[in-house]
Length: 160
Length: 386
Ligand SMILES: [Zn+2]
Image (tube, rainbow over all chains, first blue to last red; front, side, top):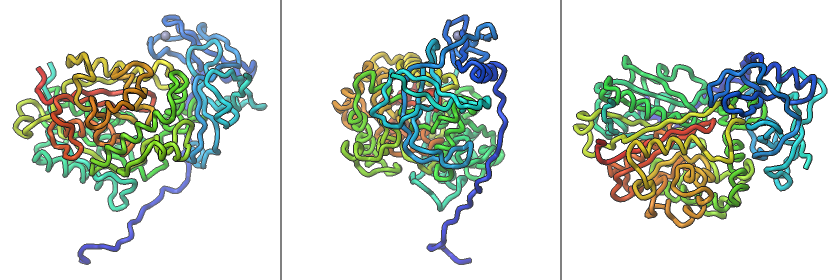
Protein backbone atom coordinates (compact mmCIF):
# COMPACT_ATOMS: atom_id res chain seq x y z
CA UNK A 1 0.00 0.00 0.00
CA UNK A 2 1.72 3.18 1.12
CA UNK A 3 4.70 1.60 2.86
CA UNK A 4 5.95 2.93 6.21
CA UNK A 5 3.87 5.94 7.26
CA UNK A 6 6.14 8.49 8.87
CA UNK A 7 4.05 11.61 9.10
CA UNK A 8 0.69 10.17 10.14
CA UNK A 9 -1.35 12.27 12.55
CA UNK A 10 -2.10 10.16 15.66
CA UNK A 11 -5.79 10.50 16.49
CA UNK A 12 -7.81 10.05 19.66
CA UNK A 13 -11.58 9.79 20.22
CA UNK A 14 -13.17 11.39 23.25
CA UNK A 15 -16.14 10.00 25.15
CA UNK A 16 -18.06 13.24 25.38
CA UNK A 17 -19.05 14.69 28.74
CA UNK A 18 -22.39 13.00 29.40
CA UNK A 19 -22.64 11.77 32.97
CA UNK A 20 -23.98 8.35 33.92
CA UNK A 21 -26.29 8.66 36.95
CA UNK A 22 -26.45 6.06 39.70
CA UNK A 23 -28.75 5.67 42.70
CA UNK A 24 -26.94 4.24 45.70
CA UNK A 25 -28.70 2.68 48.71
CA UNK A 26 -27.61 4.23 51.99
CA UNK A 27 -29.15 1.48 54.12
CA UNK A 28 -31.13 1.77 57.35
CA UNK A 29 -28.35 2.90 59.66
CA UNK A 30 -27.02 5.49 57.24
CA UNK A 31 -30.56 6.77 56.68
CA UNK A 32 -30.96 7.09 60.47
CA UNK A 33 -27.74 9.11 60.56
CA UNK A 34 -29.06 11.67 58.07
CA UNK A 35 -32.49 11.79 59.76
CA UNK A 36 -30.86 12.51 63.13
CA UNK A 37 -28.58 15.09 61.56
CA UNK A 38 -31.62 16.90 60.15
CA UNK A 39 -33.67 16.75 63.36
CA UNK A 40 -31.05 17.13 66.10
CA UNK A 41 -27.97 18.48 64.30
CA UNK A 42 -25.90 15.85 66.05
CA UNK A 43 -23.90 12.91 64.72
CA UNK A 44 -24.81 9.30 65.34
CA UNK A 45 -22.24 6.57 65.81
CA UNK A 46 -22.46 2.87 66.60
CA UNK A 47 -20.67 0.93 69.35
CA UNK A 48 -19.41 -2.56 68.59
CA UNK A 49 -20.21 -4.75 71.62
CA UNK A 50 -17.20 -6.93 70.83
CA UNK A 51 -14.32 -4.43 70.47
CA UNK A 52 -16.10 -1.54 72.21
CA UNK A 53 -15.17 0.94 69.47
CA UNK A 54 -17.60 3.68 68.46
CA UNK A 55 -17.67 4.15 64.70
CA UNK A 56 -19.16 7.01 62.73
CA UNK A 57 -21.13 6.83 60.47
CA UNK A 58 -23.13 3.94 61.96
CA UNK A 59 -22.92 0.76 59.93
CA UNK A 60 -24.42 -2.68 60.22
CA UNK A 61 -21.18 -4.59 60.68
CA UNK A 62 -17.94 -3.92 62.54
CA UNK A 63 -15.33 -4.81 59.88
CA UNK A 64 -12.42 -5.93 62.05
CA UNK A 65 -14.70 -8.03 64.34
CA UNK A 66 -17.14 -9.09 61.61
CA UNK A 67 -19.76 -8.43 64.26
CA UNK A 68 -23.39 -7.73 63.35
CA UNK A 69 -24.47 -4.48 65.03
CA UNK A 70 -28.02 -3.66 66.09
CA UNK A 71 -30.01 -0.44 66.35
CA UNK A 72 -29.56 -0.73 70.12
CA UNK A 73 -25.84 -0.16 69.57
CA UNK A 74 -26.39 3.28 68.00
CA UNK A 75 -25.11 6.11 70.19
CA UNK A 76 -25.57 9.89 70.05
CA UNK A 77 -22.46 11.98 69.52
CA UNK A 78 -21.91 15.73 69.48
CA UNK A 79 -21.27 18.02 66.52
CA UNK A 80 -17.64 18.68 67.47
CA UNK A 81 -14.37 16.91 66.89
CA UNK A 82 -10.60 17.10 66.46
CA UNK A 83 -8.53 17.38 63.27
CA UNK A 84 -6.52 14.17 62.94
CA UNK A 85 -5.06 14.96 59.51
CA UNK A 86 -5.71 17.41 56.70
CA UNK A 87 -4.56 18.54 53.29
CA UNK A 88 -5.16 21.70 51.29
CA UNK A 89 -6.12 20.51 47.80
CA UNK A 90 -4.57 22.84 45.30
CA UNK A 91 -4.54 21.08 41.94
CA UNK A 92 -7.30 20.91 39.33
CA UNK A 93 -9.23 17.71 38.68
CA UNK A 94 -12.60 16.52 37.39
CA UNK A 95 -15.27 15.60 39.94
CA UNK A 96 -16.75 12.31 38.69
CA UNK A 97 -20.08 13.24 40.32
CA UNK A 98 -20.54 16.30 38.12
CA UNK A 99 -18.13 15.90 35.22
CA UNK A 100 -16.91 19.40 36.03
CA UNK A 101 -13.75 20.72 37.66
CA UNK A 102 -14.15 20.70 41.43
CA UNK A 103 -13.59 24.19 42.90
CA UNK A 104 -10.11 24.53 44.45
CA UNK A 105 -8.46 25.26 46.76
CA UNK A 106 -10.32 23.45 49.52
CA UNK A 107 -9.21 21.65 52.66
CA UNK A 108 -9.78 17.94 52.95
CA UNK A 109 -9.85 16.88 56.58
CA UNK A 110 -10.06 13.79 58.74
CA UNK A 111 -12.06 14.61 61.85
CA UNK A 112 -12.28 12.48 64.96
CA UNK A 113 -15.86 13.21 66.10
CA UNK A 114 -15.94 13.55 69.89
CA UNK A 115 -16.96 10.28 71.48
CA UNK A 116 -15.99 8.16 68.47
CA UNK A 117 -12.92 6.03 67.80
CA UNK A 118 -12.52 6.47 64.07
CA UNK A 119 -12.34 9.34 61.60
CA UNK A 120 -14.96 11.18 59.57
CA UNK A 121 -13.72 12.56 56.26
CA UNK A 122 -15.05 15.94 55.20
CA UNK A 123 -14.08 19.53 54.39
CA UNK A 124 -12.59 22.16 56.73
CA UNK A 125 -13.29 25.83 56.01
CA UNK A 126 -10.12 27.84 55.50
CA UNK A 127 -7.31 27.05 53.07
CA UNK A 128 -4.34 28.74 54.76
CA UNK A 129 -2.27 25.73 55.72
CA UNK A 130 -0.27 27.74 58.25
CA UNK A 131 -3.46 28.33 60.28
CA UNK A 132 -4.62 24.71 60.39
CA UNK A 133 -3.00 22.22 62.73
CA UNK A 134 -3.51 18.59 63.56
CA UNK A 135 -5.17 18.53 67.00
CA UNK A 136 -7.37 21.63 66.51
CA UNK A 137 -10.99 21.44 67.61
CA UNK A 138 -13.71 21.83 64.98
CA UNK A 139 -17.50 22.06 64.86
CA UNK A 140 -19.79 20.95 62.04
CA UNK A 141 -21.71 23.69 60.24
CA UNK A 142 -24.94 22.46 58.63
CA UNK A 143 -26.84 23.76 55.66
CA UNK A 144 -30.27 25.27 56.10
CA UNK A 145 -32.27 22.79 54.08
CA UNK A 146 -31.17 19.22 54.80
CA UNK A 147 -31.51 16.76 51.91
CA UNK A 148 -30.22 13.53 53.44
CA UNK A 149 -26.73 13.49 51.99
CA UNK A 150 -23.19 14.23 53.11
CA UNK A 151 -23.45 17.85 51.97
CA UNK A 152 -26.00 18.48 54.74
CA UNK A 153 -22.75 19.19 56.57
CA UNK A 154 -21.39 22.30 54.83
CA UNK A 155 -17.97 22.03 56.43
CA UNK A 156 -16.19 21.86 59.76
CA UNK A 157 -15.09 25.19 61.21
CA UNK A 158 -12.13 25.56 63.54
CA UNK A 159 -13.24 26.62 67.01
CA UNK A 160 -9.81 26.60 68.71
CA UNK B 1 1.23 -28.53 49.62
CA UNK B 2 1.98 -25.70 47.19
CA UNK B 3 4.42 -26.31 44.35
CA UNK B 4 7.58 -24.23 44.11
CA UNK B 5 7.26 -21.47 41.52
CA UNK B 6 9.78 -19.19 39.83
CA UNK B 7 9.76 -16.20 37.51
CA UNK B 8 11.52 -17.11 34.29
CA UNK B 9 10.99 -14.07 32.08
CA UNK B 10 9.92 -10.42 32.15
CA UNK B 11 9.07 -7.71 29.63
CA UNK B 12 8.17 -4.03 29.80
CA UNK B 13 7.31 -1.19 27.48
CA UNK B 14 9.44 1.93 27.36
CA UNK B 15 7.18 3.87 29.72
CA UNK B 16 6.00 7.32 28.60
CA UNK B 17 3.46 9.96 29.61
CA UNK B 18 1.34 9.32 26.53
CA UNK B 19 1.62 6.63 23.87
CA UNK B 20 -0.59 7.96 21.10
CA UNK B 21 0.98 5.52 18.63
CA UNK B 22 -0.66 2.48 20.25
CA UNK B 23 -4.05 1.56 21.67
CA UNK B 24 -4.26 -0.39 24.92
CA UNK B 25 -4.15 -3.83 23.31
CA UNK B 26 -1.11 -2.91 21.24
CA UNK B 27 0.61 -1.52 24.32
CA UNK B 28 -0.01 -4.83 26.11
CA UNK B 29 1.38 -6.81 23.18
CA UNK B 30 4.69 -4.93 23.35
CA UNK B 31 5.29 -6.09 26.93
CA UNK B 32 4.08 -9.65 26.24
CA UNK B 33 6.28 -10.09 23.17
CA UNK B 34 9.32 -8.71 25.01
CA UNK B 35 8.61 -11.06 27.94
CA UNK B 36 8.22 -14.17 25.79
CA UNK B 37 11.41 -13.27 23.91
CA UNK B 38 13.23 -12.80 27.22
CA UNK B 39 12.50 -16.37 28.34
CA UNK B 40 12.18 -17.95 24.88
CA UNK B 41 8.75 -19.33 25.69
CA UNK B 42 6.21 -19.60 22.88
CA UNK B 43 2.72 -18.18 23.45
CA UNK B 44 1.54 -21.75 22.62
CA UNK B 45 3.23 -22.97 25.80
CA UNK B 46 1.49 -20.44 28.05
CA UNK B 47 -1.19 -22.35 29.96
CA UNK B 48 -3.12 -19.42 31.44
CA UNK B 49 -3.12 -15.64 31.71
CA UNK B 50 -3.84 -13.27 34.61
CA UNK B 51 -4.30 -9.64 33.59
CA UNK B 52 -5.14 -6.46 35.48
CA UNK B 53 -5.55 -2.71 35.24
CA UNK B 54 -7.43 -0.02 37.15
CA UNK B 55 -11.22 0.13 37.16
CA UNK B 56 -12.54 3.27 35.42
CA UNK B 57 -9.18 4.40 34.01
CA UNK B 58 -9.87 3.47 30.40
CA UNK B 59 -13.60 2.77 30.90
CA UNK B 60 -13.31 -0.74 29.49
CA UNK B 61 -15.09 -3.68 31.08
CA UNK B 62 -14.00 -7.32 30.60
CA UNK B 63 -10.40 -6.35 29.96
CA UNK B 64 -9.59 -10.07 30.01
CA UNK B 65 -11.56 -10.55 26.79
CA UNK B 66 -11.05 -7.08 25.34
CA UNK B 67 -7.28 -7.49 25.41
CA UNK B 68 -7.06 -11.00 23.94
CA UNK B 69 -5.24 -10.06 20.76
CA UNK B 70 -2.63 -8.14 22.74
CA UNK B 71 -2.20 -10.65 25.55
CA UNK B 72 -2.02 -13.74 23.35
CA UNK B 73 -4.91 -15.18 25.33
CA UNK B 74 -7.07 -16.34 22.42
CA UNK B 75 -8.78 -19.59 23.54
CA UNK B 76 -6.82 -19.72 26.81
CA UNK B 77 -8.00 -19.50 30.43
CA UNK B 78 -7.81 -15.81 31.40
CA UNK B 79 -8.65 -14.11 34.68
CA UNK B 80 -8.82 -10.39 35.32
CA UNK B 81 -7.70 -9.16 38.72
CA UNK B 82 -8.26 -5.57 39.82
CA UNK B 83 -7.37 -4.35 43.31
CA UNK B 84 -6.50 -0.68 42.85
CA UNK B 85 -2.87 0.26 43.41
CA UNK B 86 -2.00 -3.32 44.30
CA UNK B 87 -3.38 -4.60 40.99
CA UNK B 88 0.10 -5.41 39.66
CA UNK B 89 1.19 -7.32 42.74
CA UNK B 90 -2.22 -9.02 42.95
CA UNK B 91 -1.83 -10.12 39.32
CA UNK B 92 1.61 -11.53 40.20
CA UNK B 93 0.35 -13.27 43.33
CA UNK B 94 -2.67 -14.70 41.46
CA UNK B 95 -0.35 -16.04 38.73
CA UNK B 96 1.81 -17.54 41.48
CA UNK B 97 -1.28 -19.18 43.03
CA UNK B 98 -2.21 -20.62 39.61
CA UNK B 99 1.17 -22.34 39.24
CA UNK B 100 1.59 -23.25 42.91
CA UNK B 101 -1.80 -25.00 42.82
CA UNK B 102 -0.40 -27.58 40.42
CA UNK B 103 -3.04 -26.89 37.79
CA UNK B 104 -0.88 -24.79 35.43
CA UNK B 105 2.83 -25.02 34.55
CA UNK B 106 3.42 -21.67 32.81
CA UNK B 107 1.30 -18.62 33.58
CA UNK B 108 1.64 -15.19 32.03
CA UNK B 109 0.93 -12.22 34.33
CA UNK B 110 0.14 -8.88 32.69
CA UNK B 111 -0.40 -5.42 34.17
CA UNK B 112 -1.05 -2.35 32.08
CA UNK B 113 -2.45 1.16 32.09
CA UNK B 114 -3.06 3.97 29.67
CA UNK B 115 -3.15 6.65 32.32
CA UNK B 116 -3.32 9.30 29.61
CA UNK B 117 -6.82 8.24 28.62
CA UNK B 118 -8.69 9.71 31.61
CA UNK B 119 -8.50 12.22 34.43
CA UNK B 120 -6.56 10.15 36.97
CA UNK B 121 -8.02 11.87 40.03
CA UNK B 122 -11.61 11.55 38.76
CA UNK B 123 -11.05 7.85 38.04
CA UNK B 124 -9.48 7.25 41.45
CA UNK B 125 -12.28 9.13 43.24
CA UNK B 126 -14.68 6.43 42.05
CA UNK B 127 -12.87 4.03 44.44
CA UNK B 128 -14.20 5.97 47.43
CA UNK B 129 -17.53 5.36 49.09
CA UNK B 130 -20.20 7.24 47.10
CA UNK B 131 -22.35 8.11 50.13
CA UNK B 132 -19.76 9.17 52.68
CA UNK B 133 -16.34 9.82 51.18
CA UNK B 134 -16.67 10.84 47.55
CA UNK B 135 -17.88 14.40 48.16
CA UNK B 136 -14.70 15.47 49.94
CA UNK B 137 -12.21 12.95 48.51
CA UNK B 138 -9.85 14.34 45.89
CA UNK B 139 -7.97 11.25 44.74
CA UNK B 140 -4.71 9.74 45.86
CA UNK B 141 -2.68 12.87 46.53
CA UNK B 142 -4.67 14.50 49.39
CA UNK B 143 -5.28 11.14 50.98
CA UNK B 144 -1.53 10.53 51.07
CA UNK B 145 -1.01 14.16 52.12
CA UNK B 146 -3.17 13.64 55.18
CA UNK B 147 -1.01 10.67 56.14
CA UNK B 148 2.11 12.78 55.61
CA UNK B 149 0.80 15.68 57.70
CA UNK B 150 0.06 13.36 60.61
CA UNK B 151 3.50 11.72 60.27
CA UNK B 152 5.31 15.08 60.21
CA UNK B 153 3.43 16.19 63.30
CA UNK B 154 4.20 12.96 65.14
CA UNK B 155 7.97 12.78 64.51
CA UNK B 156 9.01 16.29 63.47
CA UNK B 157 9.76 15.11 59.94
CA UNK B 158 10.42 17.89 57.40
CA UNK B 159 9.57 18.41 53.74
CA UNK B 160 13.30 18.28 52.99
CA UNK B 161 13.52 14.81 54.60
CA UNK B 162 10.90 13.59 52.13
CA UNK B 163 12.53 15.38 49.19
CA UNK B 164 15.63 13.24 49.77
CA UNK B 165 13.56 10.17 48.81
CA UNK B 166 12.39 11.83 45.56
CA UNK B 167 16.02 12.65 44.71
CA UNK B 168 17.05 9.02 45.25
CA UNK B 169 14.28 7.60 43.08
CA UNK B 170 15.14 9.89 40.19
CA UNK B 171 18.87 9.24 40.51
CA UNK B 172 18.17 5.51 40.24
CA UNK B 173 15.76 5.98 37.31
CA UNK B 174 18.66 7.38 35.31
CA UNK B 175 20.06 3.82 35.18
CA UNK B 176 16.79 2.33 33.92
CA UNK B 177 16.12 2.67 30.16
CA UNK B 178 12.42 1.76 30.67
CA UNK B 179 11.69 4.45 33.29
CA UNK B 180 9.37 7.33 32.42
CA UNK B 181 11.07 10.21 34.32
CA UNK B 182 14.87 9.94 34.18
CA UNK B 183 16.15 13.49 34.65
CA UNK B 184 18.07 13.90 37.93
CA UNK B 185 16.57 16.32 40.47
CA UNK B 186 17.84 18.01 43.65
CA UNK B 187 16.25 18.61 47.03
CA UNK B 188 15.94 22.26 45.99
CA UNK B 189 14.06 21.25 42.81
CA UNK B 190 11.58 19.28 44.91
CA UNK B 191 11.15 22.13 47.40
CA UNK B 192 10.56 24.63 44.58
CA UNK B 193 8.05 22.47 42.69
CA UNK B 194 4.37 23.54 42.86
CA UNK B 195 2.43 22.62 46.00
CA UNK B 196 -0.33 20.19 44.98
CA UNK B 197 -1.77 19.36 48.38
CA UNK B 198 0.17 20.30 51.48
CA UNK B 199 2.77 18.89 52.15
CA UNK B 200 2.99 17.14 48.76
CA UNK B 201 4.58 19.02 45.91
CA UNK B 202 4.73 18.02 42.25
CA UNK B 203 8.12 16.29 42.58
CA UNK B 204 7.05 14.44 45.75
CA UNK B 205 4.56 12.31 43.88
CA UNK B 206 4.40 9.71 41.09
CA UNK B 207 3.68 10.67 37.47
CA UNK B 208 0.89 9.39 35.21
CA UNK B 209 2.29 6.89 32.76
CA UNK B 210 1.26 4.79 29.77
CA UNK B 211 2.90 1.39 30.04
CA UNK B 212 2.64 -2.37 30.42
CA UNK B 213 4.57 -5.19 32.04
CA UNK B 214 4.47 -8.97 31.58
CA UNK B 215 6.02 -11.77 33.64
CA UNK B 216 6.08 -15.56 33.13
CA UNK B 217 5.71 -17.76 36.23
CA UNK B 218 6.74 -21.42 35.89
CA UNK B 219 6.58 -24.51 38.07
CA UNK B 220 9.53 -26.32 39.58
CA UNK B 221 10.85 -28.78 37.00
CA UNK B 222 9.76 -26.49 34.17
CA UNK B 223 11.35 -23.26 35.38
CA UNK B 224 14.90 -24.64 35.50
CA UNK B 225 14.64 -25.71 31.85
CA UNK B 226 13.48 -22.24 30.76
CA UNK B 227 15.78 -19.97 32.74
CA UNK B 228 19.44 -20.23 33.66
CA UNK B 229 18.71 -18.43 36.93
CA UNK B 230 15.03 -18.56 37.81
CA UNK B 231 13.85 -16.06 40.43
CA UNK B 232 12.05 -18.23 42.99
CA UNK B 233 9.01 -16.98 44.87
CA UNK B 234 9.89 -17.62 48.51
CA UNK B 235 6.78 -16.13 50.10
CA UNK B 236 3.81 -13.89 49.45
CA UNK B 237 1.42 -12.07 51.76
CA UNK B 238 -1.72 -10.02 51.22
CA UNK B 239 -3.42 -7.79 53.81
CA UNK B 240 -6.55 -5.86 53.00
CA UNK B 241 -8.19 -3.28 55.23
CA UNK B 242 -11.70 -1.87 55.66
CA UNK B 243 -13.25 0.25 52.95
CA UNK B 244 -13.66 3.65 54.58
CA UNK B 245 -10.82 6.14 54.72
CA UNK B 246 -12.16 7.14 58.12
CA UNK B 247 -11.38 3.73 59.59
CA UNK B 248 -7.64 4.11 59.05
CA UNK B 249 -5.61 5.01 62.13
CA UNK B 250 -3.10 7.52 60.79
CA UNK B 251 -1.02 7.45 63.94
CA UNK B 252 -0.28 3.74 63.95
CA UNK B 253 1.26 3.65 60.49
CA UNK B 254 0.46 1.45 57.54
CA UNK B 255 -0.68 -1.57 59.56
CA UNK B 256 -1.43 -3.68 56.47
CA UNK B 257 2.17 -3.27 55.29
CA UNK B 258 3.55 -4.13 58.73
CA UNK B 259 1.43 -7.29 58.87
CA UNK B 260 2.13 -8.34 55.27
CA UNK B 261 5.89 -7.79 55.63
CA UNK B 262 5.98 -9.66 58.92
CA UNK B 263 4.20 -12.65 57.43
CA UNK B 264 6.33 -12.66 54.28
CA UNK B 265 9.54 -12.53 56.36
CA UNK B 266 8.40 -15.19 58.82
CA UNK B 267 7.37 -17.62 56.07
CA UNK B 268 10.86 -17.54 54.63
CA UNK B 269 12.82 -17.28 57.88
CA UNK B 270 14.01 -13.67 57.56
CA UNK B 271 14.83 -12.29 61.01
CA UNK B 272 17.14 -9.33 60.36
CA UNK B 273 15.48 -7.87 57.28
CA UNK B 274 18.07 -5.15 56.59
CA UNK B 275 20.91 -7.67 56.81
CA UNK B 276 19.26 -10.50 54.93
CA UNK B 277 17.61 -8.64 52.04
CA UNK B 278 19.90 -7.52 49.21
CA UNK B 279 17.56 -5.25 47.26
CA UNK B 280 14.00 -3.91 47.48
CA UNK B 281 11.44 -2.82 44.94
CA UNK B 282 8.89 -1.02 47.10
CA UNK B 283 5.62 0.52 46.00
CA UNK B 284 6.33 4.08 47.16
CA UNK B 285 3.83 6.36 45.39
CA UNK B 286 5.10 9.51 47.11
CA UNK B 287 8.21 10.66 48.87
CA UNK B 288 6.93 10.49 52.48
CA UNK B 289 6.18 6.79 51.96
CA UNK B 290 9.92 6.30 51.46
CA UNK B 291 10.31 7.31 55.11
CA UNK B 292 7.19 6.19 56.93
CA UNK B 293 6.62 2.92 55.12
CA UNK B 294 10.16 1.60 55.54
CA UNK B 295 9.45 2.03 59.25
CA UNK B 296 6.21 0.06 58.78
CA UNK B 297 8.18 -2.74 57.10
CA UNK B 298 10.60 -2.69 60.02
CA UNK B 299 13.81 -1.60 58.28
CA UNK B 300 14.15 1.01 61.03
CA UNK B 301 12.21 2.18 64.08
CA UNK B 302 9.29 4.64 64.14
CA UNK B 303 10.49 8.14 63.23
CA UNK B 304 13.91 6.85 62.11
CA UNK B 305 13.10 6.82 58.37
CA UNK B 306 14.67 10.22 57.60
CA UNK B 307 18.00 9.26 59.17
CA UNK B 308 18.02 5.79 57.59
CA UNK B 309 17.53 7.35 54.15
CA UNK B 310 19.83 10.37 54.57
CA UNK B 311 22.70 8.12 55.66
CA UNK B 312 22.57 6.56 52.19
CA UNK B 313 21.45 3.08 53.29
CA UNK B 314 18.83 2.90 50.53
CA UNK B 315 20.98 4.33 47.71
CA UNK B 316 22.73 2.19 45.10
CA UNK B 317 25.84 0.91 46.88
CA UNK B 318 24.14 1.33 50.27
CA UNK B 319 23.34 -1.34 52.81
CA UNK B 320 19.85 -1.98 51.38
CA UNK B 321 19.31 -0.41 47.93
CA UNK B 322 15.66 0.56 47.43
CA UNK B 323 14.17 0.83 43.94
CA UNK B 324 17.15 0.56 41.56
CA UNK B 325 14.50 0.94 38.83
CA UNK B 326 13.59 4.44 40.00
CA UNK B 327 10.40 3.14 41.56
CA UNK B 328 6.82 4.37 41.31
CA UNK B 329 7.80 8.03 41.51
CA UNK B 330 9.62 7.63 38.19
CA UNK B 331 7.09 5.38 36.43
CA UNK B 332 3.44 4.87 37.30
CA UNK B 333 1.29 3.03 34.77
CA UNK B 334 -0.85 2.01 37.73
CA UNK B 335 -2.17 -1.46 36.78
CA UNK B 336 1.40 -2.38 35.80
CA UNK B 337 3.15 -0.61 38.67
CA UNK B 338 3.09 -3.47 41.19
CA UNK B 339 4.03 -6.02 38.54
CA UNK B 340 6.99 -3.85 37.52
CA UNK B 341 8.19 -4.09 41.14
CA UNK B 342 7.99 -7.91 40.89
CA UNK B 343 9.65 -7.95 37.46
CA UNK B 344 12.46 -5.64 38.57
CA UNK B 345 13.13 -7.76 41.66
CA UNK B 346 13.28 -10.89 39.44
CA UNK B 347 15.63 -9.12 37.02
CA UNK B 348 17.93 -8.31 39.96
CA UNK B 349 18.03 -11.97 41.00
CA UNK B 350 18.56 -13.16 37.43
CA UNK B 351 21.47 -10.70 37.10
CA UNK B 352 19.93 -9.01 34.06
CA UNK B 353 19.55 -5.49 35.44
CA UNK B 354 22.56 -4.04 33.56
CA UNK B 355 23.28 -0.47 34.75
CA UNK B 356 20.82 -0.76 37.63
CA UNK B 357 22.12 -4.15 38.83
CA UNK B 358 22.86 -4.51 42.55
CA UNK B 359 25.82 -6.92 42.89
CA UNK B 360 25.19 -10.52 43.93
CA UNK B 361 21.47 -10.39 44.78
CA UNK B 362 20.31 -13.50 46.62
CA UNK B 363 17.14 -12.15 48.25
CA UNK B 364 14.81 -9.42 46.99
CA UNK B 365 11.75 -7.90 48.66
CA UNK B 366 8.72 -6.46 46.89
CA UNK B 367 5.69 -4.54 48.17
CA UNK B 368 2.44 -3.35 46.64
CA UNK B 369 0.17 -0.60 47.97
CA UNK B 370 -3.47 0.12 47.25
CA UNK B 371 -6.18 2.65 47.80
CA UNK B 372 -7.71 2.12 51.22
CA UNK B 373 -4.33 1.39 52.75
CA UNK B 374 -3.89 -2.24 51.90
CA UNK B 375 -0.63 -4.04 51.11
CA UNK B 376 0.98 -6.97 49.34
CA UNK B 377 4.45 -8.34 50.04
CA UNK B 378 6.64 -10.85 48.24
CA UNK B 379 10.09 -12.30 48.88
CA UNK B 380 12.06 -13.60 45.89
CA UNK B 381 15.27 -15.62 46.06
CA UNK B 382 18.05 -17.05 43.95
CA UNK B 383 18.00 -20.34 45.87
CA UNK B 384 15.06 -22.65 45.39
CA UNK B 385 13.00 -22.61 48.59
CA UNK B 386 13.13 -25.73 50.78
ZN1 LIG C 1 -15.76 -4.52 66.70
